[in-house]
Image: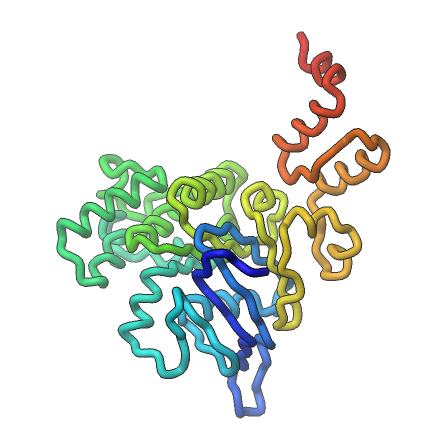
Length: 298
């Protein structure tokens, strides 16, 4: 898929762990794609498909054995300087699974301030960024900044870890299973936060998740990895409503999409490809206004 305003570009990228040893393992093969500014992308694939290796190439944690990578037109490769890589990692924030396990400071404020201080910013600028980041994730500074991060709930810890990345004001945010281990309320709060960051602030978001039923209403584009290759790069709705393609790449379709596909086969007046409950109900209302009206009346 071609992006109009290219932020990150990969061309024929390959990577092998423990190359030139008896334990060599090919992790990426010929991956080419473009990621545009402000996109919200879902990245999925089974364990060992290469998705975690791929996202580590996007901010320079890993550098390709083959192919080329550009970020905002600047090529990232084996010879890239440490200074440029550090700058890249400020622009592209990466949160692995359970990022709260990386919280370590005595207070929430100090933890969120860690990244901006490493950027060499003055303390006033650090303070401004910390307070802004805490506000963005819904952790009011007055209540939370002096608390120990270990005194927070699971969802609050996840948001505090995210605030630590946002305080560096990245242009792109990459998250590996951002709602893993959270209860439904905590997961919904994280997804809503990511929606707001993408739509209101223009932040590019790439989310690795197996929870497609939660991610589908947010992401417009779907990337599917298998065997180290990018096997699908398409509009998310198109894939979720293409039963044959979903089966071919081993992608479980959300129950709501399966139900709507069946309903549409029975009632041709149903239109659209809803990927969330709100869209599903809207499609029903447009097709059966009298039925919906009677069902909602007291």
